Length: 231
Image (cartoon, one colour):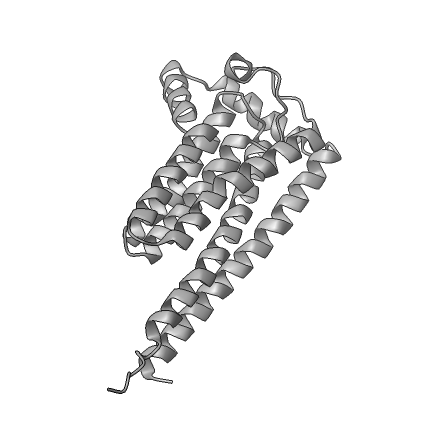
């Protein structure tokens, strides 16, 4: 094995270790939050945060977060994933495109199933203006944004389409703003958003795992020597 091959293998192992550890942490976090929500043990925490936010809402921030929440809706995240996957497909990375498209599909299936399972009522605020009577836990906005943005940030960074700073902004700042907007608008309890983030991260870990697997195969194929055909 050459020196470059050993360096690549070491980096790949570190990346896999980080992905696996993050996935385990996301599973444990969601299990803890979900268990507490089911047992109604988050009422004091959620109520305290909601009361503080409602007491400190200002019209300018309400307008800003309505815009953030609208732009960061689940359908917007799905559209973002489709556009990002189409670009990767155009560049010839079809398997990579599939791993990106998987993020919103799995996220939607996850939060729709969880909402029916927990059947948690929403807080009595602005959320009902544009949410109707849908259940609250986990937040669909938080789940979808974390799943799609974290997946895109990692894949586009590894493909050297964006730099690490932009990847951090996409993977952290965007889901953070979208999640905070849901709590500020009284559309969700705080634990709805935290649970959604952990669920979204878990989905992203699964998609990144698929991407790393396909990337390893692609690199392995590229490293194979070209057979010499005897004349």
